Image (cartoon, rainbow, N blue to C red; front, side, top):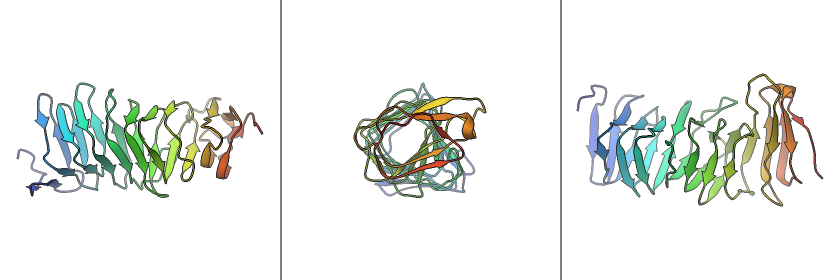
Length: 239
């Protein structure tokens, strides 16, 4: 153990627990391969995982309270649950390749316009995606989202509005929040159409106030509530 701030590394045959002070990070360096034999659990207080080499997690659960980073030259192979359970602002960058993890977002960090887990640099492309509850948040921050399996939104998905989202919409729970890009200049965004019922809850929370315009590109079906906050403007409404 060459890292003085990691106080212990425990394994009971099924779980690898990185137990140390808050903000302790785990790195898989270039040329190295990490193949856990069971669950990998990092600290819920900013325990982050950085993969520059190869991590073969198989179907074992991986959880962390901090950031997740896979270098474009790295490899993260995983078919199990990848859980984010922290309460501070952290980032998600899976590298430039899709992953087959089942991502579970339980982040409670709530500071608009990018609360919770913030997707950075590369698109988010996963198997299943679950936003656990009403106090949990995922922010796309202009990055595309692809969910190949089940999308379950029981919480809050924040997006600018210019992202491409490829998924089967969850229409019986959750909130989508459109924020615009916050660049202080006038922009137009189209609220996405998903079919007869498009959203359970829809909120427009324009970070640029009335400068940005949000338009409905098709007939919009809202299951419960639609809110206009922060001065965003609906440019066109289909009925």
